View 1 (cartoon, rainbow, N blue to C red):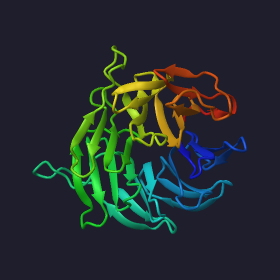
View 2: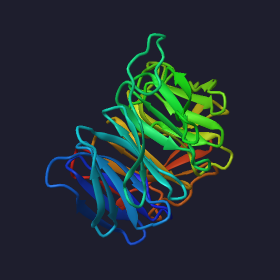
View 3: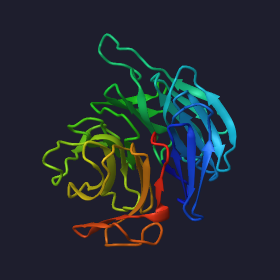
View 4: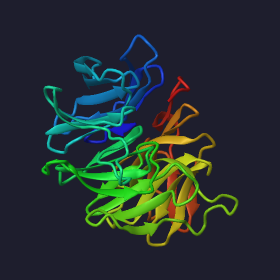
Length: 338
């Protein structure tokens, strides 16, 4: 899932290769048939300067530049690869992709030509590697320093890259097991969600790579040690940088967490694993393996109007409200393979 630049449109990638385009202002939803075969859409990003254009990636190695009318403008294929993740630079400068082959490729956003490749690497005699060795599930470009980006996957590391250096790689953080879009950047801080029970939500310093905080909410269910996270984000509606959102398998809810209080301040019950999320200002969109996708508003000052002007199904906790929208602002995806 991804919000458009102005937050008016939400894109949802489906397991059958279709892309659902939901216009919240016009209350219109349409389906873009991006493939005649069952090519699961794995990642979506809007073009940073052209609000009607977006990129998509799928499990057949296809990367497309599309418009909201459903037309594919440019299409390239990475042979024998699955595209699990992509990100775009804030100034329209580059597109970065990664997936099954553990290589990271940089594209020119307009021509979709490869301009650089960071190859995968096998173990060296000293036990260190220059690149990744297993599938990658997240690449994230710094929102204001577009020469920096992060990458993570199944090899138990998050790499920090600077495209201005000869090799690109400037630092490696060992430990995180990334299995989704669960890396985010806010100024000089990195949020990393891991698909494991212990130490699965961590905050790192971008400059040093040092661990700043293992985030273990004090009011988490006693019967569980944690989630197996697929998605983690800084909450865009919080100017104090205190709140994060995350979801996965095991906890049974999509959560809003306070870093300062180290506690869950709100939760939306969802029994199926939450596998994707995105934020725009005070709105959060998240989807699960149940085939449902929800748009909600979060307020730290009490109940505010939900996306469709209703306030049904709200859950209040310690003065904080996760306002659950219904009607037009709950998007039900017919295909269960979200």
